[in-house]
Length: 317
Image (cartoon, rainbow, N blue to C red):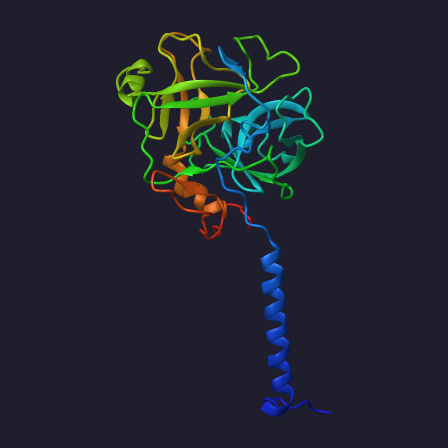
């Protein structure tokens, strides 16, 4: 028996096919309507390792996460979407191909008492910036961490915004850093390890380049770095704060201006903290992380719809 390859008459099978397609389309629309929109970025829904900092409030910084290696805090990071975290690439040195060693703890205000509403998720893979050289103080010290599964947003777990092209941070702009790192060099944050916060002003790039100048042709501050902190020292990020956010508030929303990367010592005079600028790497992040939200002085854009790259191992969010 040979099946006909001619199209069926409109009054018969084709009408049934069209009806089925319409039903499928309407069902898909209903299913899409059930998917909740992501919460607005950079807006805490508050309830109620930083040197010289102070304890933060519960749910004050709901995008700050603890990246843990074998269950021990290693670095901090910032939640961008339900599947992606951004942090410092150097946090994964010598372990890039061992994602099973790592997990991400979200919604934990105190590491020693994370609470029932915190979430711990495995790491599927880590994508460092392609030009990062794995040397201390190198440019492009930024990595994207793909979570094993989507997390559930809550008042303790929310995404942060990326700055859009309208955002410029002049010197002396007050921003904030947070972390669970050492409170002094060699002095770990004591139990219950409450997330610390510290206000830090942006430092003029020329001033910072001069402070970290290493001789002819050997400037340590590259074009994708920015500096923040206090020239007199005493207050700074420290060991264990790496990968955490430098956050600035613009038009009522918190933006991820930078990632804690490096410095010389902790809170030393004329050695402010050095951060990787998100503005410098915004295009790279947008190419990989579908749904990242950008904001700026004009209200900014909503979730980015940039397509995923054809290479680099990134999968759809």
